[in-house]
Length: 86
Image (cartoon, rainbow, N blue to C red; front, side, top):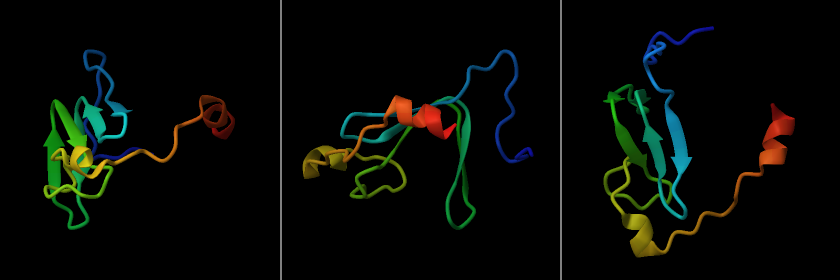
């Protein structure tokens, strides 16, 4: 099944990477399409940061509020557990 709304990858394009910033936002690096609950689309050609703390005044984007409120990520991903789920 393919999603026609997602950016198309080719052999020249690096894969999109989603990384957690320690006690901070999600970093999305690479071409991606972000669609909100109203169907508004935001093309993200480079790097964006998405809020994980819930305190950003610019949701879904991070505005640095995690540092002001002392956000601490609750859990860490377990690589062994992820491999079993795959």
